[in-house]
Length: 148
Image (cartoon, rainbow, N blue to C red; front, side, top):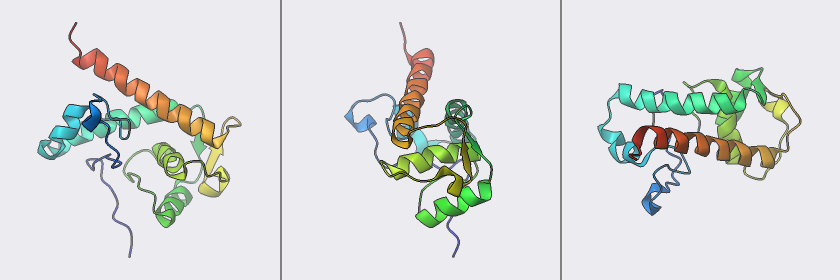
Protein backbone atom coordinates (compact mmCIF):
# COMPACT_ATOMS: atom_id res chain seq x y z
CA UNK A 1 0.00 0.00 0.00
CA UNK A 2 1.48 3.42 -0.96
CA UNK A 3 2.47 5.78 1.80
CA UNK A 4 0.15 8.72 2.41
CA UNK A 5 1.67 11.73 0.68
CA UNK A 6 1.80 15.10 2.36
CA UNK A 7 0.17 18.14 0.85
CA UNK A 8 1.46 21.70 0.79
CA UNK A 9 -0.78 22.38 3.82
CA UNK A 10 0.48 19.39 5.86
CA UNK A 11 2.16 20.11 9.16
CA UNK A 12 5.96 20.43 9.09
CA UNK A 13 6.08 19.19 12.71
CA UNK A 14 8.92 16.76 13.48
CA UNK A 15 7.65 15.84 16.94
CA UNK A 16 10.54 17.53 18.76
CA UNK A 17 9.03 20.90 19.58
CA UNK A 18 11.24 23.29 21.53
CA UNK A 19 8.63 26.02 21.90
CA UNK A 20 7.43 24.19 25.01
CA UNK A 21 10.76 25.24 26.54
CA UNK A 22 10.22 28.90 25.65
CA UNK A 23 11.77 29.10 22.19
CA UNK A 24 9.96 31.52 19.88
CA UNK A 25 11.17 29.50 16.87
CA UNK A 26 11.02 25.70 17.12
CA UNK A 27 14.45 24.14 16.65
CA UNK A 28 12.73 21.11 15.09
CA UNK A 29 10.35 22.36 12.39
CA UNK A 30 11.44 26.04 12.43
CA UNK A 31 7.90 27.37 12.78
CA UNK A 32 7.13 30.26 15.11
CA UNK A 33 5.52 29.44 18.45
CA UNK A 34 2.28 31.22 17.51
CA UNK A 35 2.10 29.17 14.29
CA UNK A 36 2.43 25.93 16.23
CA UNK A 37 -0.21 26.94 18.76
CA UNK A 38 -2.64 28.11 16.05
CA UNK A 39 -1.89 25.43 13.41
CA UNK A 40 -5.17 23.55 13.84
CA UNK A 41 -7.11 26.80 13.48
CA UNK A 42 -5.24 27.90 10.34
CA UNK A 43 -6.94 27.72 6.97
CA UNK A 44 -5.32 25.63 4.25
CA UNK A 45 -4.03 28.86 2.70
CA UNK A 46 -2.44 29.99 5.99
CA UNK A 47 -0.74 26.61 6.39
CA UNK A 48 0.55 26.80 2.82
CA UNK A 49 2.05 30.24 3.53
CA UNK A 50 4.05 28.80 6.43
CA UNK A 51 5.24 25.82 4.38
CA UNK A 52 6.10 28.12 1.45
CA UNK A 53 8.33 30.20 3.74
CA UNK A 54 10.12 27.13 5.09
CA UNK A 55 10.47 25.71 1.57
CA UNK A 56 12.05 28.95 0.30
CA UNK A 57 14.51 28.98 3.20
CA UNK A 58 15.52 25.35 2.57
CA UNK A 59 15.95 25.91 -1.17
CA UNK A 60 18.01 29.03 -0.48
CA UNK A 61 20.34 27.02 1.75
CA UNK A 62 20.54 23.85 -0.38
CA UNK A 63 20.63 25.13 -3.99
CA UNK A 64 24.36 25.96 -3.96
CA UNK A 65 25.27 22.68 -2.27
CA UNK A 66 23.20 20.00 -4.01
CA UNK A 67 21.23 19.13 -7.12
CA UNK A 68 18.46 16.53 -7.31
CA UNK A 69 19.01 14.76 -10.63
CA UNK A 70 16.39 12.04 -10.05
CA UNK A 71 13.48 13.12 -7.85
CA UNK A 72 11.64 9.82 -8.38
CA UNK A 73 14.62 7.85 -7.06
CA UNK A 74 14.94 10.20 -4.10
CA UNK A 75 11.22 9.94 -3.32
CA UNK A 76 11.26 6.14 -3.65
CA UNK A 77 14.26 5.77 -1.32
CA UNK A 78 12.83 8.17 1.27
CA UNK A 79 9.53 6.27 1.23
CA UNK A 80 11.31 2.90 1.52
CA UNK A 81 13.34 4.18 4.47
CA UNK A 82 10.20 5.56 6.16
CA UNK A 83 11.61 9.10 6.11
CA UNK A 84 8.94 11.72 6.61
CA UNK A 85 9.01 14.39 3.87
CA UNK A 86 6.50 16.62 2.11
CA UNK A 87 5.98 15.28 -1.44
CA UNK A 88 4.41 18.56 -2.59
CA UNK A 89 7.49 20.67 -1.85
CA UNK A 90 10.54 21.19 -4.06
CA UNK A 91 12.55 17.92 -4.11
CA UNK A 92 15.60 19.93 -3.05
CA UNK A 93 13.90 20.32 0.37
CA UNK A 94 13.74 16.55 0.74
CA UNK A 95 17.52 16.56 1.14
CA UNK A 96 17.00 18.36 4.45
CA UNK A 97 14.67 15.54 5.57
CA UNK A 98 17.17 12.89 4.44
CA UNK A 99 20.04 14.47 6.38
CA UNK A 100 17.84 15.04 9.43
CA UNK A 101 16.72 11.40 9.49
CA UNK A 102 20.16 9.96 8.70
CA UNK A 103 21.78 11.55 11.75
CA UNK A 104 25.45 10.58 11.81
CA UNK A 105 24.91 7.79 9.27
CA UNK A 106 26.86 8.19 6.03
CA UNK A 107 25.41 7.30 2.63
CA UNK A 108 26.10 7.71 -1.07
CA UNK A 109 24.10 10.72 -2.30
CA UNK A 110 24.11 9.43 -5.90
CA UNK A 111 22.09 6.37 -4.76
CA UNK A 112 19.39 8.85 -3.76
CA UNK A 113 19.44 10.80 -7.01
CA UNK A 114 21.39 13.68 -5.46
CA UNK A 115 24.55 15.30 -6.78
CA UNK A 116 26.80 17.18 -4.39
CA UNK A 117 27.97 20.43 -5.97
CA UNK A 118 30.89 20.51 -3.54
CA UNK A 119 32.59 17.81 -1.52
CA UNK A 120 30.72 17.79 1.80
CA UNK A 121 31.07 15.83 4.97
CA UNK A 122 27.52 14.54 5.48
CA UNK A 123 27.34 15.14 9.24
CA UNK A 124 29.01 18.54 9.06
CA UNK A 125 26.75 19.75 6.24
CA UNK A 126 23.64 18.47 8.06
CA UNK A 127 24.53 20.57 11.08
CA UNK A 128 25.33 23.60 8.90
CA UNK A 129 22.02 23.33 7.03
CA UNK A 130 20.03 22.95 10.25
CA UNK A 131 21.83 25.90 11.84
CA UNK A 132 21.33 28.12 8.77
CA UNK A 133 17.64 27.23 8.56
CA UNK A 134 17.15 28.08 12.23
CA UNK A 135 19.04 31.37 11.77
CA UNK A 136 16.89 32.36 8.76
CA UNK A 137 13.73 31.54 10.72
CA UNK A 138 14.90 33.48 13.78
CA UNK A 139 15.87 36.53 11.69
CA UNK A 140 12.49 36.39 9.94
CA UNK A 141 10.74 36.18 13.31
CA UNK A 142 12.75 39.10 14.70
CA UNK A 143 12.05 41.23 11.63
CA UNK A 144 8.30 40.68 11.65
CA UNK A 145 7.28 40.04 15.22
CA UNK A 146 9.64 41.74 17.64
CA UNK A 147 8.72 45.19 18.91
CA UNK A 148 11.51 47.61 19.74
